Length: 111
Image 1 (cartoon, rainbow, N blue to C red):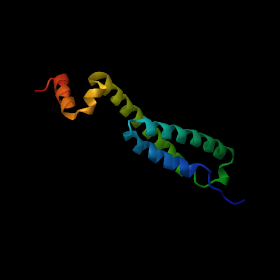
Image 2 (image 1 turned 135 degrees about the vertical axis):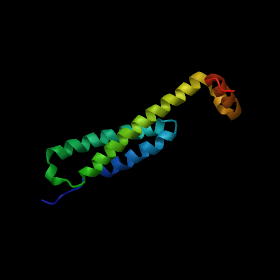
Image 3 (image 1 turned 180 degrees about the vertical axis):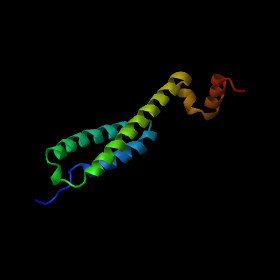
Image 4 (image 1 turned 180 degrees about the horizontal axis):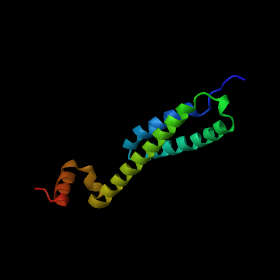
């Protein structure tokens, strides 16, 4: 029988890359795409484990899964950082760069 490609290996790889790049969008886009990538990877991993000799692109699936995990971690860290910034300095302060710099200097005792 001819070898096939796993149906979601390429989308998992693309979503893994998007999850790393998407962490800069306040962590939300990276978190969503990373979770979707992990769900698709889980389905294809189960498919591959049933008959590994039929599929050729399992390495792409593994790389996409690793990228998705890294993207989720980066997104969570960035999202927590944004939440901390809003809780500490306030949303209005984040809108004004000079005020934010002044408040950060006060917070860290620099001046």
